[in-house]
Length: 391
Ligand SMILES: *[C@@H]1O[C@H](CO)[C@@H](O)[C@H](O)[C@H]1NC(C)=O
Ligand SMILES: *[C@@H]1O[C@H](CO)[C@@H](O)[C@H](O)[C@H]1NC(C)=O
Ligand SMILES: *[C@@H]1O[C@H](CO)[C@@H](O)[C@H](O)[C@H]1NC(C)=O
Ligand SMILES: *[C@@H]1O[C@H](CO)[C@@H](O)[C@H](O)[C@H]1NC(C)=O
Image 1 (cartoon, protein in one colour):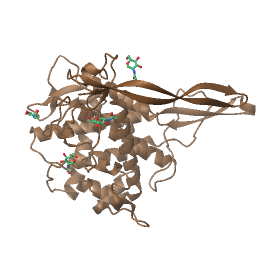
Image 2 (spheres, helix red, strand yellow; image 1 turned 90 degrees about the vertical axis):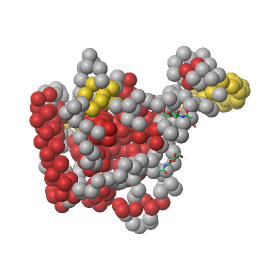
Image 3 (cartoon, protein in one colour; image 1 turned 135 degrees about the horizontal axis):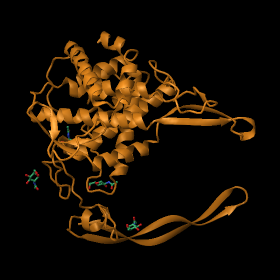
Image 4 (spheres, helix red, strand yellow; image 1 turned 135 degrees about the vertical axis):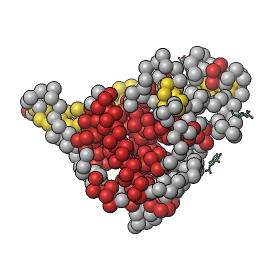
């Protein structure tokens, strides 16, 4: 594993950049193959043990201190061997990059939060269970929803690590050193301290995919298909976070004249990443394992997915009814909107089972007045509103 440390993060950063920037499929195939070779060598060296399938995941790093006290032993770094949910390779990365671990947790938390926001009005709402499987067993099905959770949490790690680099929190990275964009106006300065998305991307690839790369399922098996699916969706998430990062600038100059600008690379607002990946969820490609042991489209008439697209291999379970086999929680007790014709409408949300109506008090700010200068004063109004809950 010492070898791992010397090849990462200093080496190969440019190769990663090229790989992401370069859209030529031929080129991507070639560098993809090279990368695969490199990684299999690295992982042969450090873990040849076959892992049992288990529902635990690094996502559990997102749990709060109360849920996992072992991470917050006063005066001590969390001991990587005590953290549940990590695979062997992830545990080794944990040892090498101890200061990254709480940011990985933060990335997972961001991903989960964003997932719950994007799916708040859907039958499956990205709810979590409070053990180290985090999303419960429903994610063991290789559905579109699983695809989304993998991608958004990988994107969360890119975000959290890139930002931590910029803020000087990590010993192995600092501000972004990406080249000045060609189209930046000549008199604008380039070189504010930017989010280090190159590093964030690379680290997230090492860490998040580690578990998948350790698996050694027979080529062409269902488990192998799921591994390929996870790797593809992790990558799509990382690329979303990476590609949506953009130039941000600040004005200088006499009394806000903005005659001088300093610019740097900045991560997109994570909500935008969530929206982007939600669109990818809507257009996710149904795949199956082909004879060559690669994923292929179920319906060949569609365009083959690119590395930015989400893919899935199983149809979604029925999210209407609670089912302990699939892990579906069902929609009984969910709130719905009587007048909406969308997924949050009572008809669709309650799957035709009907709904109960309640009256509840709703408190809100009202009659707001602007006072010179400068505050807004509001009253608190209470109204009786109808609420609808699925049977
Ligand atoms: C986690 O909790 C869920 C529901 O609370 C349960 O179905 C599942 O078996 C638990 N998983 C583990 C690994 O304990
Ligand atoms: C739960 O889901 C499984 C798999 O789809 C199905 O075979 C089973 O009948 C379901 N059980 C219930 C109680 O609906
Ligand atoms: C999500 O769905 C679960 C199960 O139906 C429910 O318990 C939970 O309250 C829902 N969360 C939100 C934010 O609606
Ligand atoms: C319910 O849906 C309607 C139509 O989409 C919308 O105008 C309204 O704001 C929604 N109500 C709530 C409480 O979300």
